[in-house]
Image 1 (cartoon, helix red, strand yellow):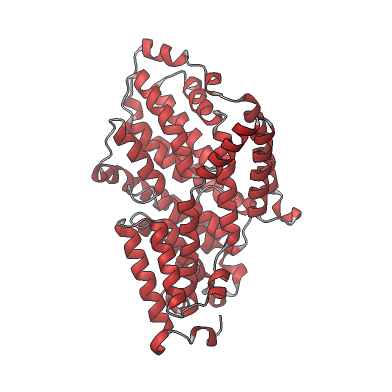
Image 2 (image 1 turned 90 degrees about the horizontal axis):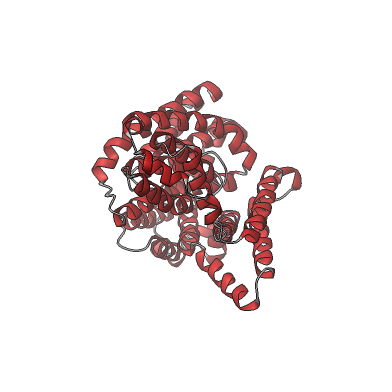
Length: 445
């Protein structure tokens, strides 16, 4: 945006300070959790326009519609697929594959959660897995807390591995032009190591002491995963469409397609197939249910947040901070990467990682000239992703999946204390980020 475009701030105030104040108030209000975060972000966006930091046309340019489309499309795909019962099938299959042995089951449910989270939204994954886990734990008469704790960690770790696994990755991929394959190639190797290490730690914390009676194990083994499938035709349709969507993500670059196009077209096709399979009345009901399942709060939160952050970028604060960060690291790319990795991890443990990453992306982009151009700062994006996604495990408020599991646990007699969770989780989060530090040092620096 040109200097002329930001010259309309009322009373001739400095656009950088005005936009910074709007950002700070927006963040503080989001963190207070007194008002829904989507409302806060939209009000902040409106203020950016009303005070003259942006005009409406420039504000709309700040919205990353590729991110919005990808999120919406994946939410629709998951909404339809979950009605088939496939995800509950996987949870019970995991328990049976572990022969209902509590420790083995703890490990396999973590792996199942991590794999699902690599392809689904983390909150959706835990909403699908946790109720089944609670039922299995009740049948086995074993404490559910270790399983729920492990599934929180697995969801955030697994989500880090791919472009579509966690909203911060969707943001980074869309705004930087990174593909599904880029994330898999650069992040999945270290995420596999992190997942194995965390599973071993959890085993020694709880798994080795978990025991169940032979009778209880027999009851779990009698569970039939196929009983969870509510619509076999929908299951087949969902698997085919999801499979094609994943292949398209992998081939996105040679196909010249953006992730949003792939996700939205896949969602449209699956909705069409679902409608063809039912009579008109049920078809209409399914369409309303599908669109009702879209997390519109998240979508509008992103829209408002994009505009607020764009206002700050236009105001010049992020360029100033980028220059200071480059100076503080002595112009050393490795030092900048380590600073971003650890700062992202610690800050994402106490603030929502989505607005944090949304603010960091233009800041890092502004660092590119100091390091020789956009192609030379690729490692910084992986540091941001690893820190922001894994840092969310550090506290109960670090990621939406954490609060979702805690809420389900509390309602089912499995209390989640903030302090207790943090005492276990924060050191484990530090271990996972330390592994990533070694990885980025070895691979990039």
